[in-house]
Image (tube, rainbow, N blue to C red):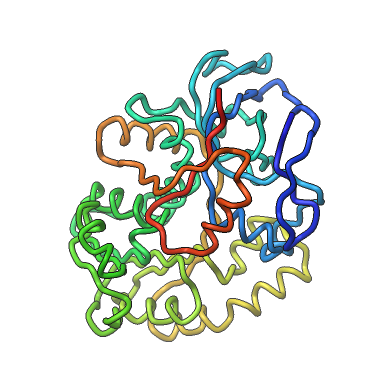
Length: 332
């Protein structure tokens, strides 16, 4: 089986012959038809998450997959061979950049009927991120005001649609070239990040979803109303994340130090900061699939590469500036 393998941090992925996936009683073996590329893949490749995601190299990358069920474990009940499925595999079982992958039944869902495999592969990680930020943590509802940064990007383009569906008034940051695009997705207010300072034009927001970190995250705290919540998906990680991941004491102390500044700023402003590292969840993905079939959420795929060109696709992703997601497809 061919797969793209990371053998050393900061080095290009290598296309190699690898062992077939092991299929447990509650696992589903998938013939991969399309994979989504994410900033997470690039961050893992360059070693940015080595402390909190300590993979043993070599490792197959890839966190979004869509394809056809080949075989199921003896205790699997929800799918059968021939079904079209999509998934964000559990982080411990990453490996979508391959011809086949075994995924836990609990981490996958049936592909929405109205979209292609490539569109399905673009969704799991970014859509689950949006769902866990807006529905699970933010509990966004009618009448609330939500700011979503980088609205034309992978997470932003889905989060705008979901927040609008939940009844929120949605503001986003985007370039002038993408202003009409994000408005079509559902944004009510668009701030051109190149010519405007969002901190000067926005205020009293209930929730901010920040994918940029740094100064952008600090400014985001100041547009929240008292008690508001800023959710960061680029960091810094917070102690609650370290506790959930059961990281060792040294790493916990390091994470507490990394986030001390932003947590202190939030406390002084009377708002909250939380770090979100999304998790695999087939039930949530199934709910997202229903929204796709109902026309509430539309996948956004900017470019499609052949599977053999995944390293070039990752380089394209790292360059930034694209709308939605980049996807790689395999010939079936």
